[in-house]
Length: 215
Image (cartoon, rainbow, N blue to C red; front, top):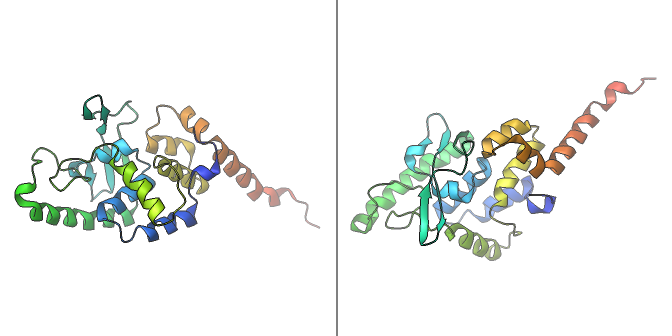
């Protein structure tokens, strides 16, 4: 459950984050974009293949995840029916994904015989085409935030940041719940109760002038 506002970034911090990430490898910039723009879990980002990305419609099809198992990483379906979903992404992110796909193809060509992955086309992969280990993004995130002096929050809280920014923009909790793949809107309401109450209070203030007697 996400209770404290300090657990997420505000809009200025998000802008600073991407400024700090400008010199990071392309795949990590894309990873940050999808975490924030689509509210994806780490396992969902890692489970993305190019066949799940519709650059024409601007959607991501979340149908599989990569998680840690007892003897290594495991590819499996999301944990609930609601977690399997189609998520729309901003046009600016679609454009970045188009550039990234070209970059990805060039990297594959450069790898030549090193490329051993023939079954999947992972968005986030090692030099040989195999998917990242489930803890790889977290390790990079800790090192990155320390290196560029960005305020550290848990990597998972980029997902919370995404939801909070949408709430602040007045997006309905039901839509946010569907984007995040929550099993029930109650999960959304419980997780983001403070942010929703704050947004509700600000909405009420906007109506205040309607009821003030004009002299």
